[in-house]
Length: 257
Image 1 (cartoon, rainbow, N blue to C red):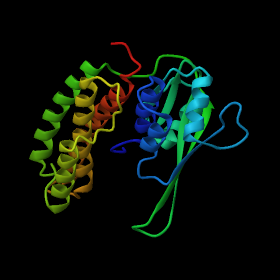
Image 2 (tube, helix red, strand yellow; image 1 turned 90 degrees about the vertical axis):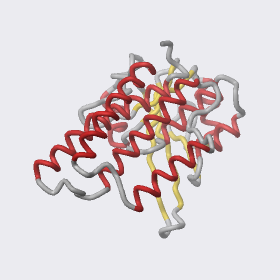
Image 3 (tube, rainbow, N blue to C red; image 1 turned 90 degrees about the horizontal axis):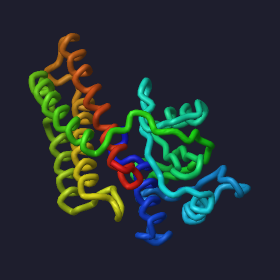
C-alpha cells in the first residue's frame, strides 16, 4: 500500500479548495507533489485531457461538493460503491477518488520514464461514472483510532516474537525519515481537517510503515514455514486496519460523525 496515496492528496487538497480554504494553484501544486504532471481525462464537457486546475473547477461545476478516498484490495472494496466497472479499475490501481454531490470518480494511471535517480512520473486521472451509495466499510475516526491502537499492540507482540519487527540500517533510516517528517509537520492533510483526523492519519502511516518494514525485512528469525505463515497472518489484519484508518482520515472532511 502507498504510504501517501495520490488519491489522498487529491481528496485532501480538493476538499480544501472546494471549501474555499486554498487557491486552485495551491491545491494543484500540493496534489502533484514530487510528480512531474497530473492530467484528468474523461471529464464531462471536455474533449481531451485537462490540467488539474481546470479539472477541479469542472468538478465543482458538475456539482461535486467533496471528495472521498477509496483504497480497495482483493476481497476488500474499501471506500467503493460501484458500479463494477469503476470498482475493477480502482482495484487494479489500488486507489480511487469518489465525488460527493455528483456521480463521478477518478482513478489514477501512473507512468514512469527515465533512468534511476531521474525518474519522470506523470499521472493521468480517468474520470468515470460511479454509483451514488454509501462507501463500503469506512469507519468513523473514533473507530479507526481504536482499531489502530489495538492492532498495533497485537502485531508488535507477534512480530517481535518472530524477530521481524524491523531492525537494521534500512529500517532505522526509514523510521528516522518518518520521525523527521512528523516533527516538521509535513502532514498529507490539507487545511480544514479536524485535529483528530491528523492524529489518525499519522498513526495509520506509522502502522503502515511498520507493516512495510516487516514485509521487506526478509525472513528475519521466521525461517520456519509455520513462522512465516504466522507473520503473514499477523500482518494481514493490521494492513487492513491501517487502510481503513487512512480512508477515515482523508474522508473526514466530508463525513458527519
